[in-house]
Image (tube, rainbow, N blue to C red; front, side, top):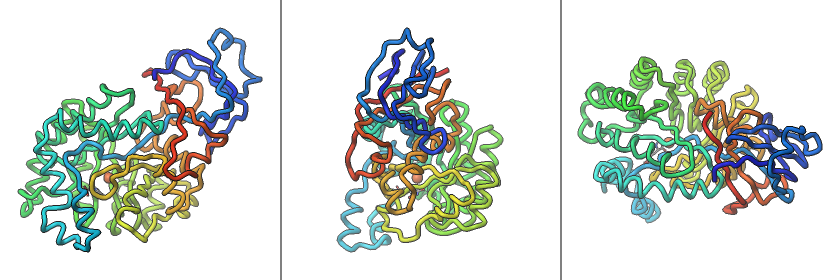
Length: 400
Ligand code: DI6
Ligand code: FE
């Protein structure tokens, strides 16, 4: 619901300003969709006295959660591939049977905007039900001009259909479409780059992403994508070091990327480059889990070098059909050894930073009143439970 002018009191507030930023027996004053004041209830200023007051009975308040890496807009699903693999089929056999990203590309190209929107909304609603107030949505399953633009228009439509902020990323460099299998340079020159320009001119993209991997695009090819993004004055981010180390994270950091994402194979050079550039490490435990990976991102090194770590669902039909941000937090703790406090920072303060947003992710005066109210006694409970959703209510603030 739209945040009313109100004083929320008798709550444990995780401001997330620095770690939990915990305020026991706290109160939050909201005016005009923004945080007016937050602090110990006993120190509430007289100016908040005119606000309607609401006793939360000791509930926990956090910033609204931010899922900073999703592919929620796509056609079809990959359940048959999931079943084939569990019956023993190899990735090659699945690919030969028409599986993989290409099968989602075919289904996405065949769907119109109405169908893509209708299929995405239930996934977005599942995230909203767990307190998500901002979501990042990528293109990348069209891999031709009109289908990519269609995906991005649907992403923008989601922000109009639901009380949620949508930030979009252009991911034309996600995979090589079959029709360009023998002409990589031609795909980048004739499709990927011109479509980025067209999307930017239509106001459809907030950032540019790429998939730097042996099965996707090389660092040199990603550099072409980044140079076009810079020319369009768009920030960049990158799927990097998911299955191997091509130096993608260091490349992203050199280009001042908002984030480098996945990072299972990130090395010390990449960590140092990200620390130097202030690039956020976005950890995606859903793909790690679904692919049964064994190489975890170097969380201890990222922590030691002060690289901000975010956590996201990477909701996509192939490697992370995950629509639970709370489960992503639990997986980030269990698989990657984040603390519950780091996991919550990863879906609030650090996730906002991974999207280049400085008006959310922390409960502080002037910030959007994007809030989540939980039936919990301490915020660590949010990462602790597996498959349990204690959300009482979600509030969405207002643009400045
Ligand atoms: N990394 C992934 O794991 C997904 N995309 C990417 O860049 C895979 C997407 C898919 O399999 O549909
Ligand atoms: Fe992804």
